[in-house]
Image (cartoon, rainbow, N blue to C red; front, side, top):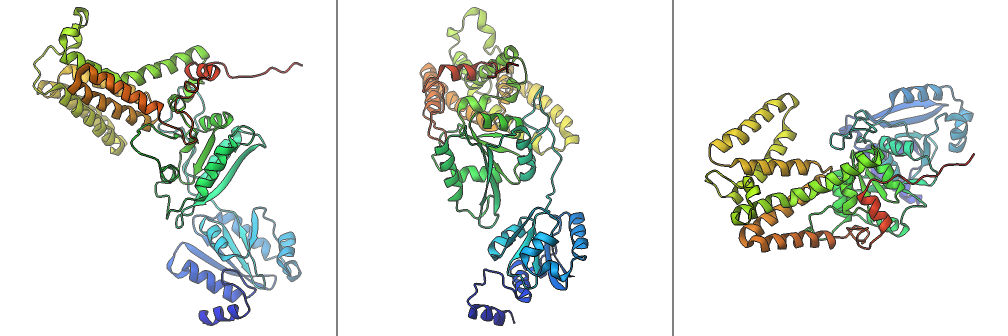
Length: 486
């Protein structure tokens, strides 16, 4: 029967990708394509409105049931003259505002699978899309990772519309734009590109839009990370991150005011900020939540810990291997006990142990986190030293390095510093002070020759040098402002 209907439509010269005025054919096409009989959450409701047969399609869990009930109750009061054609119906018989008419099946299917309600009326060759969807989401709370001592306590969630509202609340400017794209042949994931029109780099914006539009992928399996890998296909050997991720709306809004582009992906509680250099990644919201003096101290402390995480253990290993270089007043930094396991091996084991504890902490239920901490402190601390596996100095310096790593809000930057530190340890072990110098040069080269996604320097404003911007990136200066003269 479906085949005969298709043949009739083809004879009339109408494509099967379009709706027709025959409601039976439209309903059969929807039922067949959506596989209604094989999906328990796809619901269909048949009603009679103004003497015309009407079919509703909606996804259970994606629709505001109270809104649909009120709409259907209103539709029952319509007369036949109110729905003589689709334009009259939308003008007289549709009280809801977020609606759209569409006669192309592919577009209707895409809208339906994203949660919109489809309304098919007999005699209309276009259906009506009612956007009364709602998505399951958690409450807007402070992000687990990007916490602050003072400031806003709200954070992005997994729903794109809610995230857009959090940004719009902070940027009440008509020049602020959020353009929507769809990525993934099967997932059809919503991606929003946000920018302020008079501040953004138009060439970079055009490049980003072209990159997103040209992505051919089946699905964004890991949402924002999958999108990042599709956008940047360069060499992976440089560990320093190309993007800055944030779960804080205030951080994203500040980046937009600086002329950056913010990319939001549906189902991801983090947004991507581009372009990003090394100073942007190290920068945190707490720098601006305090006075300039305190903010400068916090920022400089973070810079210090960044360098400390890279060079503390390699320098200590070099001095431990060459105790004659250590002055008398610094003799306490060397190992005074017997060394049963080579120091370099101790450091490597501890590097791996720290990562193991991170993974264990992530996967440990909240009620067991305290026993895990006690176990880790006793086993990795006291018993590890008494057994002879580790010396107390190795544990101390690795603990300092770990604390310095946690001072970074960016996981990617923390692991980039970790990889540089491991390379330095290997070079120092085999080549001594020449290896330390080579490791430092290697780290500088990786940073200096890295490029942002816009192709600009990764260490701007150092290269090219911009004194005003350099001052702003190193120190916490007052934000530019003007006072109106009344």
